[in-house]
Image 1: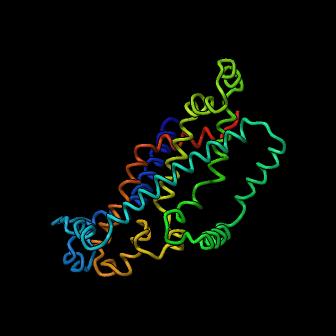
Image 2: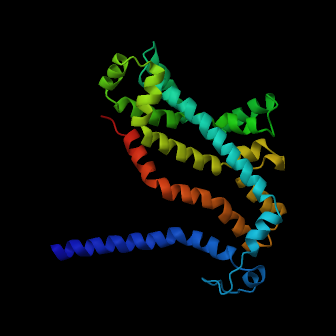
Image 3: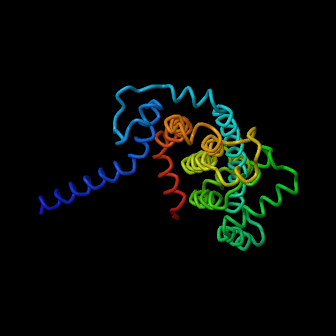
Length: 278
């Protein structure tokens, strides 16, 4: 029985290791290609899994030949502002649904959740018409406004808020704290894992945003990295100089990879806490 259990455990680990290699290989290939020179890459009739003479030429080209730094800066600005505003809106909405008592709250929340059933394509169309009518195309305001709220994040944080014992709220009231002070000084510190999770997920969402920025902006001044990469591929060096293209992709992927490696435990903890009642 012991040997059978050990064999099963070994098989599981071998399978997981193999699957990890399958998943990580594209990232390895991306980084590997970014260190190959244009000439050596084109001379490889059979792709090699190593670099004999690595070079940083592609990374220099990624910043000198195209406006990658500008795309990067736009994305950082878009991500920081959108995430900050979204967090503020989400926290207040989740607190209202979780703790405040008002007539028709359950009906309103049910209708609010039903918005998740609307296809994203319909939302994009209505947002595009609205932003266009407001003359906000090719502006940061037009990029940011449709992304400052999320039904799922509000639901996730509301569920977490409701797990905090009611006695803690009553004790805060006895100490003279207002609802505003209770929210920011007591409730948020207790629910910080979920808040961190929402923040990280929103940062990733903003960083990878493609459809909406591509639709609402046709001015390179407002391109994000996702649109910038497409622009590089179509009008820059991407179609011919694949190693330089890979170098650009590596540069814009590094922040998300670092963020995930640093906070992946927080993400799992926050999702688990937010989705568990009682």
